[in-house]
Image (tube, rainbow, N blue to C red; front, side, top):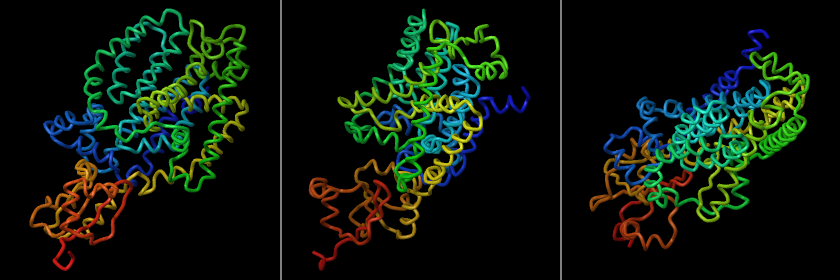
Length: 492
């Protein structure tokens, strides 16, 4: 095989392409509320950060610490760069896993599928931990699929790291259990590694349990619409579906490829024999000929799951399905489900779709179908990179406030935590004083306020009594700013 061919089939190829794709337009969308909190936490003093974590957001402590050197540079590009790098790392790992469990072509195609998913670009361009969670999930799966017993020490550390980035990502472990239980002699060391990870995670779990109501009050019991939202997000999110044809076609083709990958992988597993094309791929990719037996059997990929490596289907299906299903079931009693919380399950879907592309057998057909998948994703990628694509356009909101505020203006945050949500573009807000007796103009920064709250909230009650609405409400997602001026006697 030529050097060029080796490069083309290397896991590094889709990783580089995914990084280039995620970096495209990474600074265009405005920071939104959650990202604003990330930037604030990553730039405050350690004393201030400790007080914040003691009150809320302990589950994101490790991410905030990791973000600090990037946040020091300021701007959307620098703060979102760790997520972009994590996407590249996850793509590399997915390609490597596909290569390990099947063929170099499957690995390459799975990495490319993952790279072109609009949901991956969306969270690769966000200053939150979800892309890093996916990268650690891929790394933990790769280590689990190794052969040496000593790998379980590293695996346990990766599981602990996974939990420290996001506790709900530990729903990956049942999928790993399916893999481990099919391998002889692996159960005890796997459980021992989990016990070690549990010790490292115990302090976080205890503290986070006491902060859950404050942090995740917005989660609701999910139903079929919420499950459908995962599909919408994979294909680009609500903005992309404003013109639904292409995202719907993209999602349909992706699911069809995943189902084809399951069928193809299951067929090879039952036959236990690789085709001539599979043998050529394995032998020609460097370092894989030794995996082929004289009868055309290959340990791991097509030969079943036995004591050797598991099959791609045996790894990817539990990975793609179990975290989502378990999250939905748990949420019927204790809501934990959000599409972004199960982003780490998407690599399993990419592996299956990569296997589905490889199942087309003819190289021109494979690349033609991949090209169609990419074409269907273009409109979603453009929507993801729109300047107002995020749940809030805090940048525009701050610019409008800056243009309209006057010296001496005051500000009122309802609820008080909304102060955290606007800090990332905080210059106009820093020029505002606290509401006091001498205030004549007040900017209300709030969510949508229901009627009864005007009488139940003392601060709102005072605002309604002494001030009148004097400007149009500016709305950006859940954040609103409204100007109020002090009443004069004729207003009473």
